[in-house]
Image 1 (spheres, helix red, strand yellow):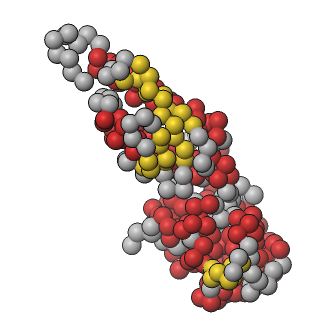
Image 2 (cartoon, rainbow, N blue to C red):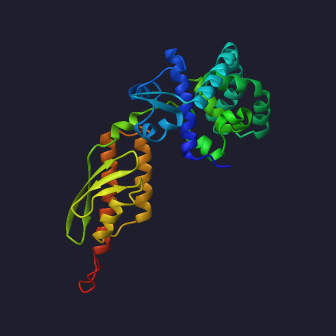
Image 3 (cartoon, rainbow, N blue to C red):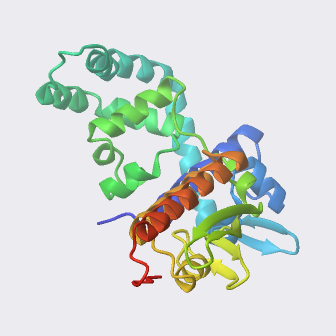
Length: 301
């Protein structure tokens, strides 16, 4: 069964809530402000809009965990405390077995992937994997969950039955694991430009565009409004309105990936502006090529 992106995100948010409670030594029944949820639990603005109701009940201006989420958090904390006493030993055992296998593969150009050796290592590490998972409570790449169709807490041993999952656990031990970030909020609602050449008007038109929690907000002379991550909506409507010739599927793919990178905190506002204009330049270059060497009598727009 597939794991939707929303489900993978909510799994990481749940673990992030536990991390925050443990770090601050909070009572699980404590009430929180929106600012605390953002800073302590690392909820992004999009999470506040679409995931806060999944975890919290609201009382006036403060939020507290729903009963069912309270139970989940308490269970995870119990498992965590039970694993702590054996955690350091488990780390050593994991590094000696899978860590050595991983390093041999990384450091040798002639390494032949030994599936049988990995299978034996994985089988021997079953008790260790349980301790490591509950002891460290790793944040995991959403793609590990989405592509595998699994959530780790549903069946820990089954989830880690893959080289990529074991590698994620090794990185966590070595301090290189995934982290919860809300740096992506830095690129929200910042006005940027998107300058595109149009043959129809024989000059560049400048669109004003902002990244929102749902996609983009576009302002232009012709059409203003919202659009999805891939630009479907106001941006595509503007381009079509001016008969601009461009690789629509490719541009949508680029815009969607760019939005995801920004949301994940991989881009500064300056980098986002630069990459947006690179997409606009791509559109312009295609638009110009379509007009070059066109017979005067064709007049194709």
